[in-house]
Each structure stands twice: as C-alpha cells, then as structure tokens.
Length: 170
Image (cartoon, rainbow, N blue to C red; front, side, top):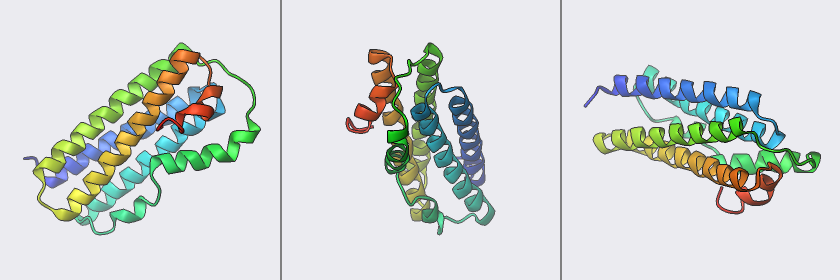
C-alpha cells in the first residue's frame, strides 16, 4: 500500500482538478441553475481539499467533521430554493453542457473508486470515517449529475431541472 502521505497527496490533486473543472463548467453554463450546481460542487471539492490539507499537515483525522456540515444534496436544495423565483425563462442546454455533465460523472465515479480502494486498505478508524463521508458525497455528486444529464438529454431544457432533479433523487 502507498504511504498515507502519498494517498493524501493524490487525493489533494484529484480535489484540485475537481475544483478547476467545476469552476470552468460554471463559467460556461448557459443557465443560472447549471451555474449554481457547478459552483456548489466546486465548494464541496474545496471543503474536501481543505480536509485533506489539514490531514496532511497534522497526519491526523480528528477534526475533519467540521468540513461536512451539509450534504451536497442539502446544499444544492438550499441554493436553488434561494434563486427559484428569480429564474423563469426556459434555456436550452447546449451539447457542450451535456458533455460537461458526462465528464463530471466520470470524474465523480473515479473519485468514488479511489476513496473506496483506500478505504479497503486503511485500518485507521478516523481515516475510515473521512473516506466513508467522501464516498457518500462523491456518490451524491454523481447522482445529481446523472439526473441532470438525463433530464437535459430528454427535454433539452434547464427549466425542468428545478422541477424534477431533486425530487427524483438528485
């Protein structure tokens, strides 16, 4: 097994890549709901990054819970409820946005596998708790992206996202 420091450094790189990806996706999104979804994911990846940086500095897992006060789904519901009444127009999703969602799903799936593999190799109870939480969050990101992709592919419109994505498990 790789050293704990090597694994954390790899996780830090993955989270930085995720932050960069979601920032660019938000910049390119044509609709405020898409923009907010990607920005919310970017903030989640920043929290993960901060948890890993602190862990790397201290090589301990004792305080990671402070970075996980809300799940991604709870955060997105909060954000979208705040802007729901401001957005009334129907904006078509572009093929580029659909591709971004597919890439995001692939990244989240790879993150889940990375953290699950590491989870299978650690015997540190605190590390297990952190990894279990990260697996949960990355799976939630994947599900939200998958639901959004499915809705946009079928309807072509962002307006349906607010009506169905969260209700249907996103």
